[in-house]
Image (tube, rainbow, N blue to C red):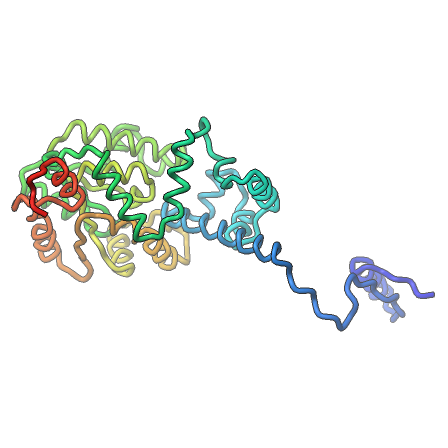
Length: 351
């Protein structure tokens, strides 16, 4: 009767035979599946689990790209190995995620309800969130506008007096922002420089000491302080501010926002000219990373009131475009979000 070995045992036998320099008739390998039969198709449950893990991995990858974080940086900040993060982003996450998902389904709850931090949300918030979740994208946008119109008190005069520039590094925020502030006769403030002044160290050291989450806290605190101290100003924000929802929403509510847009190639050229390769130093795939960051943030940047494309433009031409874009404020025209609020406050306003 023939002996049956598993694949590892067979490999060991082969190595032993080679070590003795002789051929040997090896036992057959016991296979879990008969040779010649097709692999059984995955069940509907298995397909659902694979799709869930892929979606989870994609959300992690997009969130990382929007924040301009390499996988190495995320591994350091989270204490999770790069290898596991690579598996997670490729849709091969830990099975415990699926087990938690099964528990949530058994409780008839969305998974985020189990893993949310802080106290349990009110019934009203849970039901409102579930209602909004069912709306299609266009109606969800309209619902947000209606909520802003009804509940969000916007100081129109203050918003008109503050201009905030958003965009990736190399878009021209510092150069054009300083020129615009001089033209308007208002202070020019750079949010990143303010963070450095408040912390007493460079941004790179802030990230090393406190990580991404610590930087985000400082960013919000400094933004609130700047808004309190400056009723009129031109503000240059950090490129990744838009990836922090509450901070970006605060900016949109309190400032007239301008997205300074440029092509990936233009961004890269300007960053190199500045001698600053953060966060892409020692990365041979810098351009690919830059494209991923832009792709991940574009929908967020588009929430700005106006867009000014600075690609392939001389500084003077880009500045002229920026001045024209903000002339709407001098003409006493109200930005879209604020206009909705003004109409509510003035019942005699024309539609």
